[in-house]
Length: 504
Image (tube, rainbow, N blue to C red; front, side, top):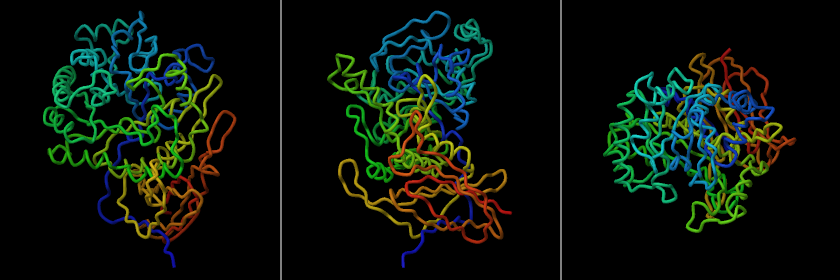
């Protein structure tokens, strides 16, 4: 007889307290993320500062803890000084090949973060920029009044420092597609000099540096800069779609869940080899199942007509493409981040608004895509202490990768957490199976009578999606029920759930 999968809370120490910054987000000057997205002066739904109030409300609901800006590839030819103060100089963005009005700059970004009540996280120009330009930016934001740039901020109407704690040196400068790409040796030297100057301006600033799960790149970075940086930044998109907007199927998306912790494990090993795993944490500060679609830009052949390289970007905003596949994958990745909370302290879903984001804007309102409800679920219903679980008899199911390779993936992905403030348990339970309800047993360790409830993100089929006037994926709260002993739970197919258990 087939056994029911069991997940048991281990006795002994937990895996640790996860940082709320694991549920962070990212926004870039690409297509409609900022202009016509979160920032839309003149729209009736925008406030006096030009920010869409419906977007702000949605961001507050998922308690965005940290917001990375301004890039992304955009930042590697971005000069921040031209986008502060009353006189703004539009410039041609060489990364995305459009004119940027520069009307959204540092002060607008910090104002956005304050309205949402999140930490700002500025990514600096390490492409065409210099160590001095990066440290000048830090002066502008963080020094009370000393020096030219702090006084410039004051002259711009901000007498108090912005107190930007988190800074990234560069974006993907290891990549040939990045403006100002560097070799491993060049990168180690630039990061060292940049970190020195930035820490001289503000020793409390926390610095990350662009990296990838590559031995040569990280050895150079860590040898040169291991004592000067606080974070190591890694990115990943599993369904790459830059030139061809071909979406991985539900089956192919589930195959990607076999590859969720690869980069984390590799970077962990390198940090441990250098004895830096207690000093440097991982910032997974760009991630999404779907890569952004921007054909004929980061290629040898450049598009000439708008229809070749700009118009196709509208395909990123087809709401019907963001289904339960995106929701289930994202939940599994968030589970992976939580299980690595000892080392991963920050992550940024890319992006928060439009493109592949969890919020879509149109002139009359917003659409909350399937991934938005996953963030709502994890932020508002999971605990902060990550428990050590023991799993038995977990089924697998056959899938195929996008390349057609057959693989088996575990059907269930379960994460255990506890609210440190009151001891309530909360289990994130994902059923990846496209069509079958699955049963599992939770051995919670709670003695005596308890109350439990389930909160579920679900749509009737794997292709369920949300659009203007069309809502198929929702978050629903179940009622509290009394129980005793082990808790048996039935999970709908392709569903994301949190089961809360509270001792009576």
